[in-house]
Each structure stands twice: as structure tokens, then as C-alpha cells.
Amino acid sequence: GLTDWALKLPETSGYGNYSARDLALLAKQNQISVRPYSELLTHGYRGKTPVDNLETALKLLNLKLTTPQFSGAKLEQQKQAFELNLAKTPVERTFLDHINQQSYQHGELLVISPQGAWKQFTAQQLQQANRQLLTSTADMTLVITGAMNARELKPLLEQWVASIPAHDGKLVWRNQGIMPKMESFNQQYPISSSDKSMVSIQFAAPAQWSQQDQLAMQLIDTIVSQRLRGELREKASGIYALGFSQMLAKRPQPYYMGRLNFTTSPERASEMVQIAQKTVDKIRQSGVTEKELTEAKNIWLTENSQVTDSSSYWTEALAQVAADDKQFQRITQEQAIIEKLSTQDINRLTKQYLGQNQKVFMMTP
Image 1: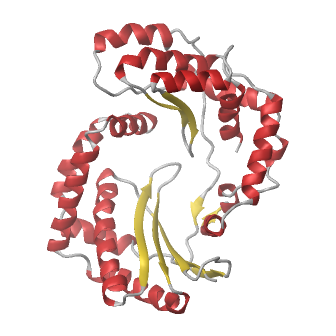
Image 2: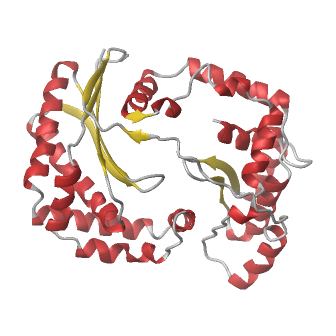
Image 3: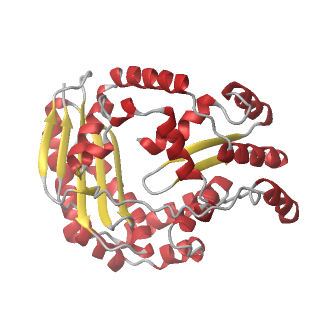
């Protein structure tokens, strides 16, 4: 809440002597974007620019880091717009909020309340938070990727980044105890505005993080998704859309989280849940085949070769490692790790994590 509002108020209030409209015009004319973001453990700015306009983008970044403005009138406008959007929240978003609130310890922190603390924010309060968040140069990491000349880049960085006054604010993140609940239950919400049911099955388990296991999870995603589509769509003809994903969280403390989402007819929702649960349990008990693993690896290698061609991939990957443990070699080791994974490695993880602590959420008409 506070971090997000503190970073975004200057976007409408302006920076330095420039209004938000002035800067929007500048960005459009130069095809550049420098926008604030805030996530669970990190915050800052993300930008995109043609190489020829890099200096203009760095000037804009400097401006946003050093001279943000905080208008009380703009804040009130933002609050009114925010409240209006909350009043128009679609049922799908309401369903997702229920899932987040019920699936996690301290899940209320993941949900925006119409009567939340944001209603009491003041421009002065947001200005103070913004300065705490953005003036600590000792906690700042800048990542730039693209086709550029390092010699030409150095003077630009010296002028627009190194010139920012040095300050060690000793920023630290606070563990608020947001963890998946290690328990099983069912919840049904008769709030759907259509004739379809949305089903979300959440899985969770305690975990130990490793790069190999994290990459192996991506292969398991592919295999489990294919098995589920085969059982639910091709054999049972019972679903419209399906998505399955998993993650091994590393910080603030390790845990495993899996999500299976699908849409189906209300009459067959319970049946599809049972088929899905049996399919996941079978993989957990019997494991995956060599053929499935080979196919999943080929899919991963093809997709990886495509995404690693983009500068946005490298920017995000380098920034994540910089914020974590600065072990940058991990990025270049991924393909070799994927190629070495065996069915024994995969089946150890399926037995350890799949299907644990199931929580079934169903939205019905």
C-alpha cells in the first residue's frame, strides 16, 4: 500500500518543474518509458528506450529519483479514482481476493480493502516514504542491457547516475509472515455472473530452495499440464481452459506453491476436481516417464532460446540476481542444469511436493 502510493503519486504530480503532461509528451516523442514499480521484496523503476535516446532516459531517471513532487489535490483525485475502481471490481477479481485471503497466513495483507489505510494517506506522508525508499544510493542497483558501446555509456552514467548524492539509508525488508497455509479445505462462492464455474486448486508444502529444483519445477509444470489437459479436456471433455504453475519461493523464507485453475460447467465442477486430484496424485505416486521428460526439456530449450534473445529478459534476470545473492553465474548455468536432470530428479520432487495441502476454491453461478 504505502510503498506503491508513495512511488506513484509523483507520476501525476510531476517532477521538478515539469508537469505529468510535460513528461508524458517527452516520453512519447522519444519513445521512452521510465515507470515506478513495487513488489514484495524490491521496488524502483523500470525503463525502456531506443539506444539513441538512452541519455534522455537517464536524464528522466535522474529527475524522478531526485525531484519528485507531491500534490495533495492530485492525491485526492487518485483516491477518488481508486475508490471508484474498487466499486466496479469484477467478480473474477473478488474470487481471486478470496483465494489469496484464505490460502495464506496473513492473507489480508494481499487484499485491498475499501476501508484500508490508503484512505488516510497524506501527501506529506507519501513524500517522506518516497524519500526513504529512493534516496539510499547504497541500496541501489542499476541494470542496463542492450546493443550499446560501453565507452559511450560510462560518461552518461557518471553524469546522470553517479552524480546522485550518496546516501546509505540501510533499507531492509520486513518479513510479514505471508506464507501458504499448510492445510486442506474446500470453499465455494456462488457469485459467478456467467453460466460457467471457475475452479482453483492451491497446493503448498515446506521447501528447501535450490536452483536445480527451481528449474526442475518448470519441467514438471509442462508435464503436469499435459497430463491434466489429456484427462480433463480430451478424455472427459469437461473443461474450457486450464492453467497449471508452480514455484519454489526463496525469500523471505522457502516454500512450495502450486496452482491449478480451470473453467467448467457448474454441473461437472466437482467431477473435474476429482479427476484433477486423481491425475496429480498418480503423478506423485508413479512419477513421470523418460519420454515426458525429454519432451518437456525440448519445449524448455526452445522457449528459452527465444526469450534469451530479448534485452528485457536479461534486465530482469540480472536485476533479480543482484537483489538476491549476486551469483550471476547462475543465469548461464540454467541450460546445462536442465539437460542433466533425470527422471529420478524429477520424481523426487513430484513425490515431495505435488498434491500437498490441497485447497479447492470454486466460483459458481
